[in-house]
Length: 217
Image (cartoon, rainbow, N blue to C red; front, side):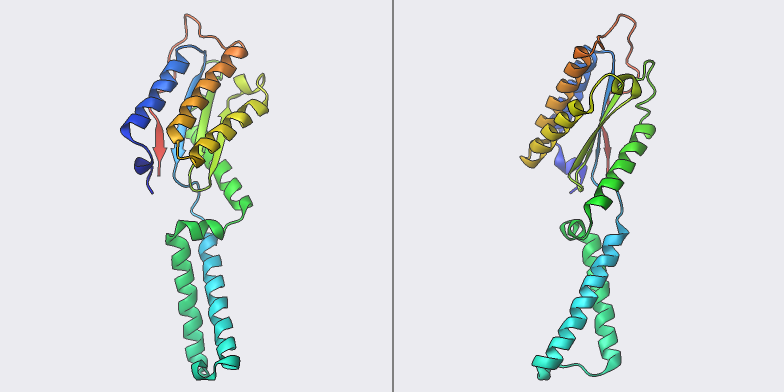
């Protein structure tokens, strides 16, 4: 599923309006970033190939022992069956995302999401604010992961548990199919956290980062 299929125009406008309303109250910039998938995960293709090749070879052994009529004795034919099965497994793992997800460890998912989030933080220049008061809300749908990353002007005074609560709320709403609701609530909560910690908007505050949503397939 592409990101454009996940959001209606109304959803995108709601999230964008929530960002603007939040930034009108606080001295900070909130940047929502959505990606469909954080990594390519070629390791899943290799694992899919290994699983299917092993399954094919296992069936050949079983048929040889228990179903003689289906036995394969020609070494070349056995080799070709195993190779074709491996290629099929790699193809399935590449194109069928639930299979790809099943073949990946949580370590790979976490590592790829963290790296993509850090890259997005730099690419979108969330750090490029006068008082280092940018917040990025990063959502990666394939991995089912959300990361809230605050620049050092905020992170030095706001406890990580505040961002963890926001992450939990977004994930809960995504699981219910309410992505926009979760994002709007998260953006509003980010504004509240900033206000609670003294990041009030001042007369000389300007909009330092564009308010457009970042959607990357």
